[in-house]
Image 1 (cartoon, rainbow, N blue to C red):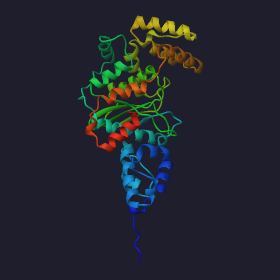
Image 2 (tube, rainbow, N blue to C red):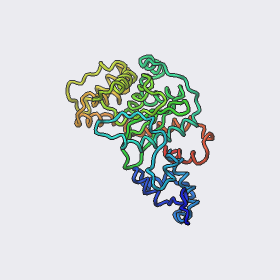
Image 3 (cartoon, helix red, strand yellow):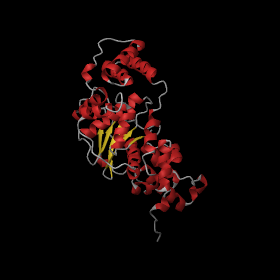
Image 4 (cartoon, one colour):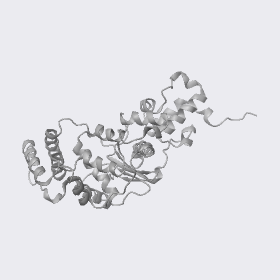
Length: 335
């Protein structure tokens, strides 16, 4: 009688990489980000070493361990039943699972290592704006990051792997700690300030409890009440009175630059935010192009993701993470 051995001894690296590809995780990304530094292709014939490497992959990427070690199983992420997706009608929930799973693992690691203690934010966006203006000229990415870190709300920028569905941002709760993850690929500080303000809007409105809150794409056409509320809070934080801005006609980029400077002085608003408000309100492809050209006058060098993660790096106690988790987190945030 032959006994069929089940378990990790049946697992091969080829099988695991194939199933990860089927889930949407390309083999190159897995090799570059999820395999330990000691891994070598020559080890693929040793089932014990393959099992050890599979454990690293599951841990780093936040995968369900049973699904990883079962050669016939579909790869699954941990905790996705708790996710609340805010997506376009033509987007399936399944297409967002990979980026949400990866971003959630990053948020979880950050929650373990964050230094500042948590202090609940006031639920009054106008009052928060006035508090920021008491210390500076306007509300921008740097001042919003400072606000978040002062209240022990970490913010991390995570770039999803190529081939996965993109999202703008996410708020997650881990270990009693809210973490904001910005995934938007744009580099301009004004853009990411709006994404951050929107995610703060979900927190201030009480939308986020013990779950993940995933925003695929933040637009003004939203009909979802929670998205509309988060957009309104973001507008109050960034602009003060959003009704001050009505763009009735197309402007050339140089005219928009001049107008943005004037409104900036008048209303204590970041001129880059004014440019984006023009594109947001006009909402035509050509108008967004004008807004982008004007924005480059105020942000000729755009490196907002790096700005976000520099704040993060200085506010983490890296020693709270094991060495492998430190290595993985540094890889994915570019530290």
